[in-house]
Length: 505
Picture 1 (cartoon, rainbow, N blue to C red):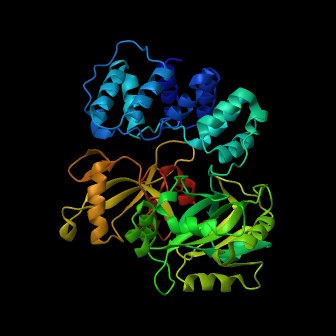
Picture 2 (tube, rainbow, N blue to C red):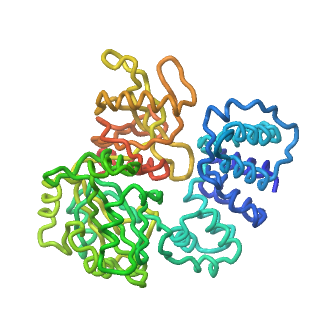
Picture 3 (cartoon, rainbow, N blue to C red):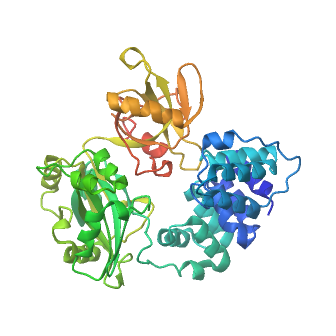
């Protein structure tokens, strides 16, 4: 398939706000794609390269001297091979080799193809095919239920691989995906509840447990072999030796556990989230000893040869209690007084509680109502779009953040407000350095950045406003923390922001 055909589909998707039209355009393109090029096509149309990060940054790509081709001649497979060669380049002279391959690739591309490649390689492709839209497009192209595609993706961890299976063998091929020890499963997500009373009313038969301010982890053990993954499925086994040792000592031969890990103070209270996250890049014994991690597990997806994904939570919780001992997250099944569980969580320094339906199965990758999170403070995870230079004490620092919510139909983030509150001097210095590395353009007052950073914002709801494209504006927003464990596809949607409008809660 010509690469230009894929670029044209991307432009068609970007030109419409209709989710249905996006799905139809993508499904048509997938239906006409050669099976050998399907994985690359799906990756490109969702703004990814099949190789992940290829080792070529913004400066390298924008500095190429490549005159556009007059006519399209590149195939998808040729682009995929070139990007693979760039990703594989290493050692002495690798910078020049990457530049040479990219120059040849861009020289063979038309102007429209060059723009697409630039956005793709630098992570700025925002043509509208987010994962949820692509899942529905794959289902339409393969004529299979979207739920089957979604479950296969949960187990495979790869949308291109899931699409290949769907197009090759339909439901039968998708159902061959099984939980496999050592291959991470996409995590199940929770939706916010307005109050604990609302949550327990919705789930009268429920597990109420602490919601900790830690880092999500998933651990796999098969005999003596242990793997530890983050919520984004990045493996961190080499950085968390104490977790590996602990899991290896559990009374089982194989297990898959979902949980949180925290760095604790000497009196057992949670350290700031950023300190926990810093350990994921630590490898020296000194760093490990200085900041030991304590895991708390809340779900069991496999135990001693038995997969539990499709078992109700009450059965998964029974299996969990058999194996994790003191590392069980605090909580109660159908507590007589749920408010006491919430009070205990807050007193211990945690965020709030989770209310989970005991009859629910593990449904990964979607925010459903089976798990509800209750926090006294209302927060949203939003994407940083830009920052304005500060004044007075903040002169010389990038301060006032422009914040965007995720478009559930796959468009670019939708701006919903600004804030300069809640920032320490240390954070201001970090923002100023980091944002300029992510810069796309600037004017006298504002530096616009690639929408890659997710920040957790505390707010007092939203209000109707014509100032921003989403028709709402944040009220009294302040920065709580950045979320390096989340990517923009996990940010809250514009619908979640609108749900905080006064009078809607």
